[in-house]
Image (cartoon, rainbow, N blue to C red):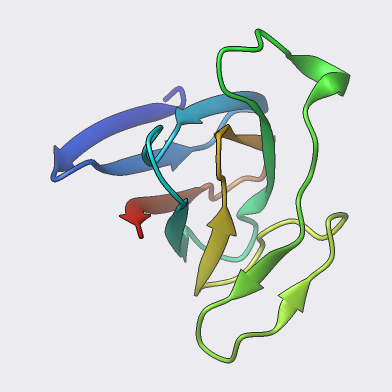
Length: 121
């Protein structure tokens, strides 16, 4: 299987990852403060890792120009450094004001699914 993004309604995206790639998610909202809530579900004992990254909306930036932001664990508000990828089941918040969100995924044998929910304020 290859990486797959399925719209679920209301802007929510189901992102199934199993192949190493940079996967574009997009912007939660271009007109106001926005973030993504990411509910991560690992596929098994070797899910791989997904590093959130972002770039200014409409910039066309790719590859090494993408920036790994500090993001947060929603369950206890723990700040996660920009060098730590998602590797466990949990809910995370990534602020993306004026930026597009990407996941730099490194594959593992069991893959992972990320449910990406846009939040605006």
